Length: 503
Image 1 (cartoon, rainbow, N blue to C red):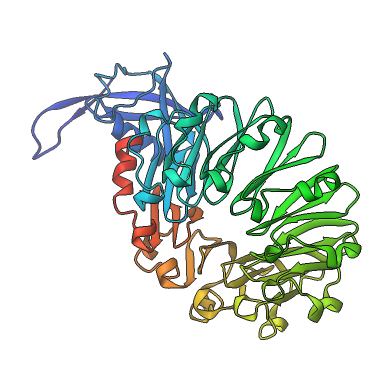
Image 2: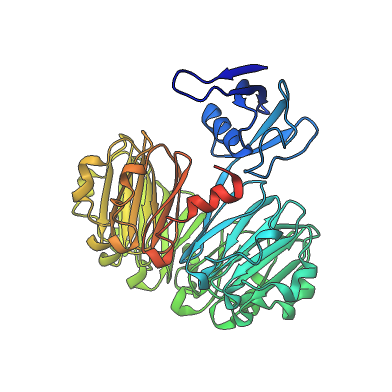
């Protein structure tokens, strides 16, 4: 053992030191020296600092997980020369409209904050959250899938936060899809279990016997559509907004994918044609363009319109003209389209040459003429509800649309360099730069002003957006900004992380 003896001016007390061999699953190892009276929490802090990790699980050679942060190394049974395995838990974020959750992938426990009525308060389920694999959200509730295939829910009961009525059936869950107020879980046997607001998709009893061999589920605001293994589709939920597909049931064969507006669905068939159903107010009627919907490869949606990319790179749009359903003004320019992004009421298409064509409501980004000459070498486009932000190949950003909602980035333009990612709330943007710093703009009340946490936004690894706030994982900390009551205040989160997972 190493003996540490106090120096001049210190009490003449010797402290026994122990050397621990800490190993990562990758094989990397480091020998760490600590006083025998050090705590597990102090050991964890040293491990995180040494290996550059955020969330860590420490396991002894005998398979014991060190959980008590206040326990000394001696009481924990650790001796000089012992070997520990440090398991790095990937920190992951999820959000409802007004609350956030952070957890370590495969770890135990979860921390939430924000509006209690939107899932920001989870003390009653914390003890159930073991080996969390994935978290899905509605507007006001969370649903966590655990390693054993079970599900734990919390949040607003009317938004799917209470799954007690179906809890005994939530076994071997493979994936969960969410509408605004309801969840739908696909089980390993291909069946489906739903809960939440009954009329909005939380009750599938009317079609339960047909929900077999389900491959995937798509959601509109208040309805679901399931694609079965045989290529047919089963819908349920509010019949007025996509929950009833009986009128087109015989046409829904060999379906490859389904897209949704707020109140209608569009299915792409294997032959490249498209079948739609739901409210005509939400583009559920495509009869006017059906003859042009051939060789469709992809469909994008605003709240009330669809835009289909054809194999030849042209585009066909339908639905509300004020929401992007009429692309006639730019029809001749929509050639070699590679991808389409959407705000609530407008579309933006990236062409093969890296330029962009926009159409729809001008107040929501449907007119990019003011910046058209600068939209070159565009790699991707992100959107708030009312504005677009284009990331160029040189790492710069060009914005247009509603200026208060992210369409005007002039005040931060000189800082938008070497941008790697762009994220969006309803009305604000946040960009992660190559050096891990963050630049935000748009509505200050929805995350457009990050000045309160700017000096701590360093080495940011990921950002999650709720409707009115952002959360970033930065240098081992969780930082939020935006509307406080909607998740924009994370001041207490770091302490809770330390209490649950250690410092």
